[in-house]
Structure formats: structure tokens, C-alpha cells
Image 1 (cartoon, helix red, strand yellow):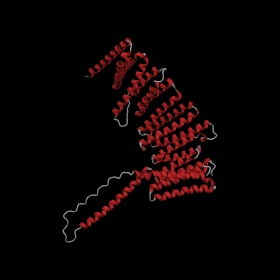
Image 2 (tube, one colour):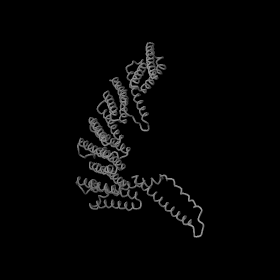
Image 3 (cartoon, rainbow, N blue to C red):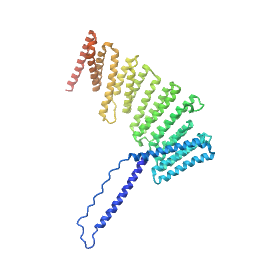
Image 4 (cartoon, one colour):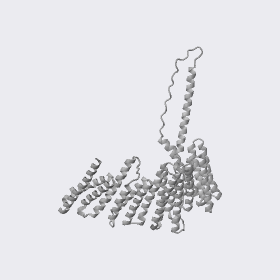
Length: 548
């Protein structure tokens, strides 16, 4: 809808330029007429130079004018349609059957005709009003069955057929006019007027029809704003439906209501996903990512809420199905040769959904182990599909497991050892990309994050095995092991992490242990510290000599 506003501004600018050019041509003709030599007169020695007209600086958008022309028109038509919808809902019951229907369609036809008349002088403003007329006609059609004050149709099937026909009419008119403004206003208001009264399964069916109409523009015209607003409106309607549990399916058992709700959510997700993946390369990458994220958030949050309201045992299965659906979306996007960012987004959402599913099935040690396995599998799978986003999500899940491991005591040592291995394996190989950073710097940052995770896991592991008085010695041993990992995999960031742990151990030794440790522990700590420092220094010396 903003594209049409900018188009109108461009047309106005072109008209002003044409008028300026015409004035300059007239002035130039007059100057040339004065310069034509008369018979018997001396010709001019040289033509009078005409200064080129100064190019006007591009005008900056006036914020006040933009708010007044763009936003106030849209807010005004929304308020007007909502007010008329309330008028139909509360007062049309006093009229006869024909009067109800005729008055509703007469109001919508008058508003649409007025919009077309305005469009002849002010195209954008007139199309906004015309779109409001279409939305009002849709609401009248919707009210013929659903609003008690206007109801004249008892058959739900007939009412749905009429609504489907009217949605097709809206799509056809907006497509022929090539107006995203008409499509956006009509579909947006149609989606929201249904929320003015009680929401039932019929309301969700009607919103699904409108969403399908909006998705036509995504597939056919590659418009983004209309389908995006429709996605938000559809899931918002379902939120209201889910909160008003008494109206979800009056008289139906709880299980049937859950099946009905999940069925609609699956339908929404399928519609929006198919529309996105039909021609994914024709959409801007940012729009595709926003579309995917919003679709995932709507399905996951609403579905999890509905399932948890009835039974927590089904939450794991539901989230597992959602994860599989996004994995399938990643496969389809790759087959469709979609932008790599879209495939990576689907893969990352698959891993995140799996991580969210784990607390619904596991707890304590099993939960930490499940998170560790999920992060490790995600990180290793990222190598095969070359997805830096999936690798980052895998590392994030490993950090979640590390944080949870600090709270759990049974089996903690095994879990920490597994986390050390997981961090190292995920860090090895593969491409890493970070927005705004070149490849080498992004790789360095990722390696540093993994090295810190491995270091923290190793420090916690060794510290948990040492007696209370030998915690500092445990830190020294952890640093020594980190040096070994760094030398083995030829990665300096592990060695830098080891130096950091070693510095902390030396600080604790000087500030705390010297004064508090018993003599035997003090002797053991200093001797082992000295031996390990000499071994590390000898290793560095040999490496330097080899390079030399």
C-alpha cells in the first residue's frame, strides 16, 4: 500500500518537471526569436549564453503531510467500517428481512462508488475508500448467517459458498486494478470485522477464505504487505478464539475442540508455507524470513497453549510434529532453490522446536542429556548442509545444557564430559557467517565462543572431582587439559582459554589459597602447578623451534 503512495508522489513530481521543461522551452523560443538578425542589421558576434536552470534539490518527505495523507486515511476508513459494522450488528434487527440485506449492501455500494469517484481526482485516497466499501460488503455477506440481527441464511454451507464467492470477487477486482491498497484495505478489514462478535468455527472458516485470497497475491503478484498482515490477523483471530473457550465449539467435548483448533492451525501453517515456497526466489529475503518466523511463532505458541490446556503428555508429540514440519520445509526450500537464508531459517527453527520439546518429556539428568544431544546433532548436521545459522543454534542449545547442568547433581560429571566433547566437535570445520563480519573474523568469533564453552565445561568437570581445598588445583588441571586440546586440534583459542583459566587459578592461589590451605595441600598445589607450567612452556618452546 505504501508503494502506491510513493507512486502518486512520483507522478506529481513528473508533472511538475514537465511544467518546468515547457516553461523553459517557451522562454528559450522567445530568446531565439529576439536573436534572429533583421534585414540589413549586423549579425550578433556571439550568442548570449543562457544559464542552465539550477537543479532543484530532492524534496524531503514531510512527516506531517505523510501522517495526514497516508496514516489518517487508513485509520479513518478502519474506524468508519467498524462503526458501520456495529450499526449493522446492533440496530439492523429492527428492520425487515429485505430491508436488512438491502440497507447493508446499499451502504457498501455507496461507499465503493464514492471511492471510485474520488479516485478520479485523488487515486490513492479514492482506492482506500473503495477498499473500505468492499470490506463492508464482505461483512454484510458474513452477517447474513452469523450476526443474529441480520441473519437471513440458516445454511452454513450456503453462507460459506457466498463468502468464498465474495473473496474471489475482492481478489479479482484488486488484481485487475493492480492495487495493493484495495486488496490490503478490503482483506484487512474483512479479517478484523469478524472479531467484532463471538468467534466460532464459522468465523475461522471465513478468515481462512480471506487468508487464501491474500495468499493469491503473494503467489501471483509477489506482494508482501497484504499476505503478512493477513497472517497476523488470522493468528490473532485464533488467539481470541482460544481465549474465549466457551465459544470454541459450543456443546462439543474437550477433545473435539482440541482437534478442531489444531486442525485450523495446521491449515493456516500449510497455506502460508505453500504460498511462500511456490516461488521463493521472487520474494525479498527479509520478507521471506519474517514470513517464516511469524508462521512458526503462531503455530508453535497457539498449538502448545491448546495442547497444554488439555494434557501435558501430548505437548512433546505436538512440538515434535512441528519440528518435522519445519524440517520438511527446509527440504522443499532447497529443492525449490530458495535463497540459502530461507533454508537455514527452516533448519534453525527445527532445532529450536526440538529443544523446546525436550522439557515436556525429560527432566533432571535426562533433560540435560537430551539438550546436549540436540545441540550436538544440530551442530554436526550444519556441516553437511553448510548452514552457519544451524551451527549457531546448536552452540546456543549446548550453552543451555551447560547452564542446566550446573543445577543438577546426579550424573553431572558424565554430562560435563559430554559437553566438552560436544563443544569441540561442533566447532571443528564448516563455514561460519555473521552479519557485518568477513568470513575469517566470523570464524574466529565462533571458535572463541566454542572454546569458552568447552573451557567452562572442563573447569566445572574437574572442579567437581576435586576436594574443597583443592579447587585451585582443579582449575590448573582444567587449564592443562585445555592446552592439550588446543595443541591437538591446532586451535589457538583453546590455548587462550587455557591461559585465562590458568590466570584465574594463579590469582586464587595467591589471594586465597596461600593463607587458607593446610601445609600439605599448599605443597601439593605449588608442586603440581610448577610441573604443569613447565610442561606447557616446554611444549611452546618445541613448537617455536619447529617453526624456526
